[in-house]
Amino acid sequence: MTAPDRFDELRCPGCAGALLRAQDALQCPNCSESFPVVDGIPRMLLPPLREALLGGAGGGSASERRKVETALSFGYEWSRFNTMYAEWEKSFLDYMQPHGREYFSGKSVLDAGCGSGRHAHYAARFGARVWAADLGPAIEVARRNAGSAGDIAFVQSDLYRLPFAPESFDMVYSLGVLHHLPDPEAGFRSLLRLVKPGGEVQIYLYWKPEGQPVKAALLALVGGMREITRRMPHPLLHALSYPLATAAFLFFVWPYNLLRAIPATRSIAEKLPMKQYAAYPFRVCVNDQFDRFSAPIENRYTQGEVRGWLERAGLENIQVLPNFGWLGTGRKPLR
Image (tube, rainbow, N blue to C red; front, side, top):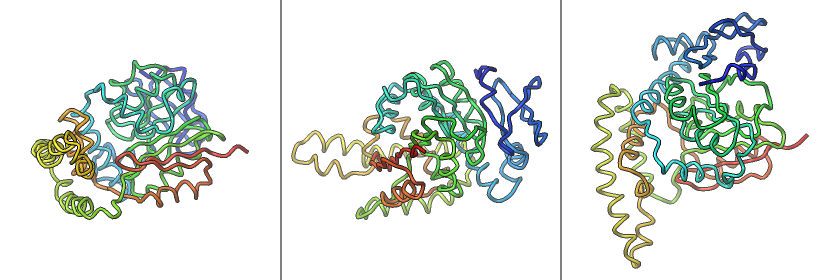
């Protein structure tokens, strides 16, 4: 549970002012906003988005409705797919390339869009002082999964208006989140202001296939289907995700396992889509099918486009690495 002595690290997402504790709320004396603390988690949402979230996807502006629709979709997803598999440790380290576990010791870290909390769990276990933030009900799942991992606190907030002072963190990471936003690069820039000079940012974005016509055709098919499936009731899509995952194993994962076992066909195996699920339990693939077909917004990028984000932000030591998508990392220059 979030410790009260960490509430003083939060700032008003509206005016960036310091907050006062008042029973079960945090109050901003500058703009008179009040933010409830529910079950130990500060709910740092400004009224338009807060009203849209509480009222479901039907309230607020069009942009807010899309954000809320996405938050509720992922909230449902992480409440159903909340298992902390042992495989998540390697997954976390893969997403953090080129940083190893030793990098996190003593660092102040923000997990922006923490989902089920599995990444925040390992950042804290490896010695970081972590804030885990998410817009929707997934924040409850994150606290259950990661709350005992180490020095970690949780906040419900909008990624575009995170409630922290500028330059608060040694590292800010956002994995698999930005590409679901209405304006992904604007979301990325909102994270940069929270990074200390000399600190680093780490992002993961879906990749856009280049020179891979089979993968491009599959993604185009998925994109067309998603226009229908994202409007389905979540329980129905959840049920549909099992046969979709079974088809993925039947046509890609099991053939990959077979082909890679034969030296003469290993090169063919490596070209198959969805081969990454060979390293995970079947239910992880089910989870990802739900994710793939439920997300209201999905953007994809080339390696050059991701590098462009980092370069336009003026970062140093830029790297863009493949990991079934693009890992972008860079360091904020010292003054």
